[in-house]
Length: 208
Image 1 (cartoon, rainbow, N blue to C red):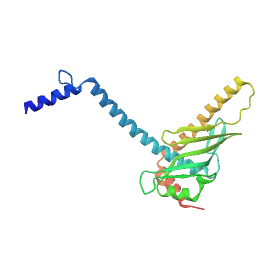
Image 2 (cartoon, helix red, strand yellow; image 1 turned 180 degrees about the vertical axis):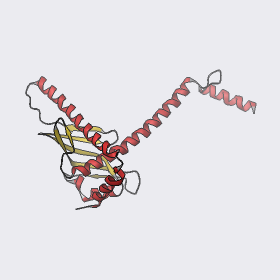
Image 3 (cartoon, rainbow, N blue to C red; image 1 turned 90 degrees about the horizontal axis):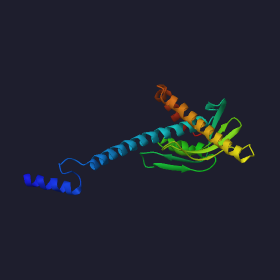
C-alpha cells in the first residue's frame, strides 16, 4: 500500500500536479478556479438567455397592439417586429423555428410554436420614437444589439454628422434599456404568474 501511494505521489509530481512538498501546485489551484468561474458564467448566461427570451416574447405580445410601450426623452416608443424571427426551446420534438417575412412574427404559426413551449430568441425590431425610426436585431443570449439601422442623419458637416450618429447610438441604447426595464418591472411583480402568463397563453391560443 505504501509503495502504491508513493508511486501515485511520484506520478503526480511528474505531471506537475504537486510540488516537492506534495501539495497541489498554484497552477492546479488556478485551473480549478478557472473551471469554477467558467461553470458559474455558463449558468449565469443560461439564466440571462432564458430571461432574454421571455423579454422578446413579452415584447412581441405587447407590440401587436401598436401602442407605445415606454417613454424615453419625453416621447413614446412603439415596437414592431419585422422580418425574420427565431424561436428556441429546450424540450420537445421541435426546439428551433425560424419564420421569415414582413408579417411572420405575428403569424398564427408563430403563436402555435410559442404555445408549444418555444420562446423568441432573436428578432428584428422597428422602434418608432417620436419622428425617428430605429431598426435593431436583438439576441436573447446576451441581449446584444446584433445589427442596427439608425435614422437618416439631418446634419451636413462631417464632424456634425459624427456627433449626431453618436447621439443616435446613445438614444438607441436608452430605448433598449427602457424596454428591458419595463419588462423587468412586470416580471418582478407577483401578478406575473397570476395574470400576465395566463394572458400571454390566451394570446398564443388566439390565432385570429
